[in-house]
Length: 293
Image 1 (cartoon, helix red, strand yellow):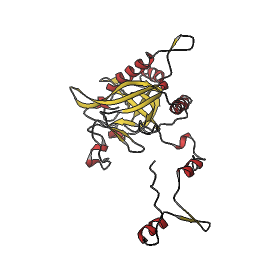
Image 2 (image 1 turned 45 degrees about the vertical axis):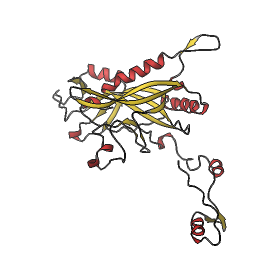
Image 3 (image 1 turned 90 degrees about the vertical axis):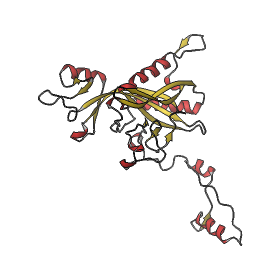
Image 4 (image 1 turned 135 degrees about the vertical axis):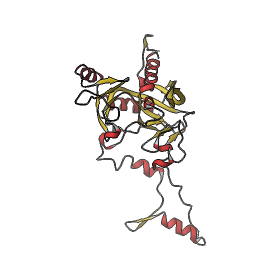
């Protein structure tokens, strides 16, 4: 959050400064109050949020922008100034991050889900999330079928039409804290990976599972995922259908800041108990259907 720079006291001979100072002040109860200070902000910390529960906030999505992303397409009407394919975009604040430099995150929780999407030609839209075991049962009953390597809900006659039938995307959700290395501030976010990026998700999980520390008795243990700092960058990828930007994870050490660790642990607890509500947006199609992540 930016803070306005306090105005300097005005001299009687400087009418411009006097006017500016007057505009930056407010009459409260007949008294003239000057610019707010950091002490004022700290004294009133959290005020205005008293009636807001977890459901009142949108969980930001962190995504890698593609050639087909509306944020980089001037004709889309949703173009973000300075946005380019390969950058990361956080959709609540609209902040952009360099894909080359990457984003520093703390992985707090992980959840695998199958997301059901209506076909765009049939109106599109998010139609719910399903646990892997539920999808497995639906496949056994013929309620979900595989067609050309993808999962669909068949039409009433049993047929599948890519442009009309609902699809089910195997999605690996990583709930993270985005860390600002300059200020130490953090933001909760969700990084959803699917299709070609599922292998990246598996690699990250394996890397964190391989981290071992010794306790006071000298025994090895695996620390929680939210004890790890991870840098995520973007890398160009391609197959016979086109090109896109994928993600790359690298372990970047352990969380040493106690406030960040406490925030990450609390976020983990909220996700685990189902207190974090996600409002999914249909993933962007880039060069082909495989780069929806």
